[in-house]
Structures are given as C-alpha cells and as structure tokens.
Image (cartoon, rainbow over all chains, first blue to last red):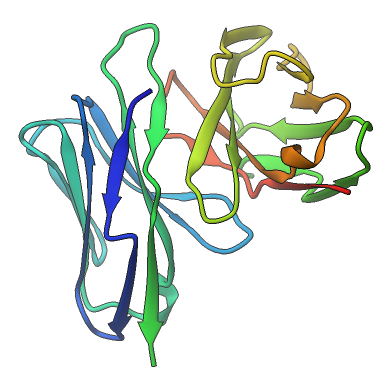
Length: 113
Length: 113
C-alpha cells in the first residue's frame, strides 16, 4: 500500500517557538489534509490543500502542497500550550473511483515549560 | 450543527462476544468512513460506505468484521467473536462528497478482556 513518511516523529520545543513538520510520499497525491489529534479524541481537520504549490493559512498555521505533489509541509508560528498534540498528514491518491485517504504516522508536539 | 457522533465512547467486551459501534454522520453528509488506530500509531483505513452501499471494504478483515450504513439510522461497525487483538480506537468520519474534507468523531475505545 501507499507509504506516507512523516517527520519528525516527535518535537520538544519551548513556548513561542516556530514549528515545522513535513510529509513525503512515494507517489503523487492530489489532495493533502493536515489533522491534529488530542489524547482520547478524534482528529480535527486543520488545513486542506488541493493544488500543487498551494499555500494556505489558518491562523498561526500554514501548510503547503509541494510542487512535486509528493510532499506537504505544516508550519506553526509562535507556539502556545494548546498546540500540544499529535499532527497527522493525510494524502488522497489520484485514482478516480478507487481513492484512499492514507495517513502518516504522526508528529508528536510537546512544549517544554 | 452537531459533528460526527460516535457511541459508545468506551466499550468493554470479553473474548468471543460481539461489539457494535455506532456512527451518526454530520448533517448533510452521506459518505462514511471507518478507521482503526492502535496506540502510538496512525489511522488505518477499514471501510468506506455511502448510504446503503459499501464502496470500499479493502481495509476490513475478511472474517468477523462487517459494516453497514442503512437508509435510516447510523452506520454500524460490527465485530463478531472479538479477540484481544481487536482492542483499539475505532474512528468514524463523514464527508459531504467522496473523500472531500473528512470530519472525524471522537471515537470508540474497544477493550477486549
């Protein structure tokens, strides 16, 4: 099946720092979604990207759909305590009629006091 | 406008019993997806349904697992004769159109004793 490599696996940062994480695939996607999951809860959609090169912001979050269509990036500026959680990328293969949404393995963000 | 509703939140079963997990999609959404998540892992696709039809069940084990989304009522994921390895968090998501912005419920944590 499709492989999505997400990095880093975990991040330990101080409040106020900027955060960068990325997701790469072995083949092309035509949609990228970024989710955040808090403990004991379901993933919450943060940003959706539909075109190569697209750059979209949601408050302090900015995500980009890579030009090669094989990667995506999520940046968080000026992190705050409520940013703690696990961030998942998800990609949709361009296989009309047989698409699947594949999830990355997640990036766990921890803020050090 | 209620989100995706899953119940129960926690379900405890003994080996050999049946587990029934329910999912009510967001209002106006006719596409439902079930995912499974083990601790410290990403979400794994199980099945995709659209009202009364199974569209893709390629991620579902061939035995003991079944899913339905009747014309009236919630989608049901049914696991017969549960085993310890079925213990996991099961998440349901819904979307207004095929694979467009999936919104997730809070999940059902299944524990098999």
